Image (cartoon, rainbow, N blue to C red):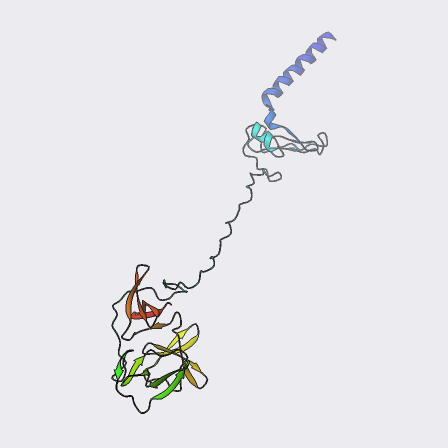
Length: 275
């Protein structure tokens, strides 16, 4: 009996050593999954001894490159970075929300027309462009303000504006003086029935004006009324009597109390009303 027991113990010891050599179970090759699933490196599928009874392997017990069901912390602790079993995907780091670009501030309110600095852009389409001033003459019958004549044409008509008497003929206004008549700037408010020859249309903010000899006209009823130069109007010529003035380091032309800025209009020298 004693010999039998000794033999049995020896056999058990030899079997235990053989199992250690043949089946080197290591901690990384084993894991109890959730409710008891046992995951290893072999290909054995057992019963319910470990909960749900699965024993998963990736080939043999020595291959631990892929481990299913191991938590990320365990996998990293045992040095298994390839945690990618299809049934238990290894969640990669989830990036935080990527903030989109901040709101792009829209353009601030436009300050409105600057009375002296018109420049390029949708608000000021005609940039400042200095060019020499050459007085323009509208023909042999046209004369600048201040011109004296001994008599006027029989076709001249009398116009009363603000209790003052004027005479109008072919685009010129006259006032009586000693021994004759003197050409004057067109009085604002005067009404004429026919525009003078050579009048040119000027579009400003959707409104069509007419320009001739330093004077602007606006259609009114069945005639045309003399108005103050509309701000923003662009004209090609100024009559005699305009003078150069300096404003904010730039040269402007002043005619009959109105400032005109030298500009470039479609490649041509021009002037824009700025005040």
